[in-house]
Amino acid sequence: MLLRLVLLSLPTGALYWLVAERELGWETMELWAIWAALLFFYALGVQASSRARGSLSVGFILITSAAFRAGSFLFERPLDLPKAGVAGADVLALLVGLALLRRAKLPLGLVLVHGWNPLVVTELGAEARLEALALLGLVSAFALLQNGQEWLAALVYGGSLGGPLPVLATIPLMGRALGFRAVVSLALGAGLWWLKGWPPALGDYTGASLAPSLVTVSRFLVTRDPSFALGVALVGFLIVAIWAAMSLKDDHSRLPEKAIVAVGAFLFLAPFVLPWWFVAIGYLAAYSRNRGWLVFTATAPLTYLAMDEGSYSFWLGFAQYFPAYASLTYVWLGRKKER
Image (cartoon, rainbow, N blue to C red; front, side):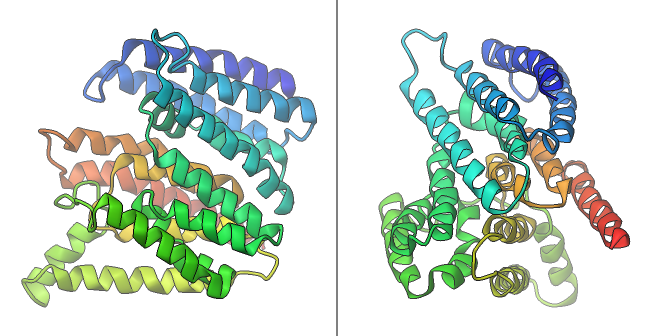
């Protein structure tokens, strides 16, 4: 298994270096060709990771994951400190992920799902997005809760709430896990958003999955006010998020698995979705039995085609979301049939 990982890491590392070196935009066919190749080798790596249990294999995955991120800044002069800091936070999240996988009784090799994920590496490494700090806080809060450190978990989780909007989708889940301590988290998160400015600036349904359709239907059948459709979406999200929270076990071993359901529901129903928000899926997908989640991270860059001077069309949204929802459904039906 180690030999297979070594063979897969060589072309993967070369492709990540090429992305960092060429600095291509998503409007170029060359970047999409590289992206397709990265996804191919990543899929093979994910397939192998579930059988990678030895310390050598896991150690190799961690080293190569760090190397893929370092390639985005290591050869720059002067050294890009923001990129180095974000990459460091991302690698720390991988180490926390090992503890979460161990607690969930999953193969430690699944840390590759996060470590080699093309969207995670390119967005957090090459683009140096500070979302890495919030996501590190989120997974760290999970690990602290599992170790019985509830107050520290509440503080760390509160810090993560100042990050990207998908993290807010975990509030019902963490409210159930933290109990009354969640008040501290919410107060800290509210303070961070007050400093950043609330509400966040949102666009006109760019990158959204269900919201544009709900708005169109509501204008024809119910009311011309789009807020009605957004209200329906909010109620749908709360139903899913509360269900995930109520099904949480007392030992919190399945916290990350429930979190991806809440985050996924948010991304499905949100009126505006940025491509790097799907990095949260890359962080959490290893803990889910449904690998269909990973397709969201594969198609997320399609939203870039609609940003700047582009427009988000039906067919662009279809190309981005249909493969992901079809994969989720296909895997779910297959697992249900096996039971």
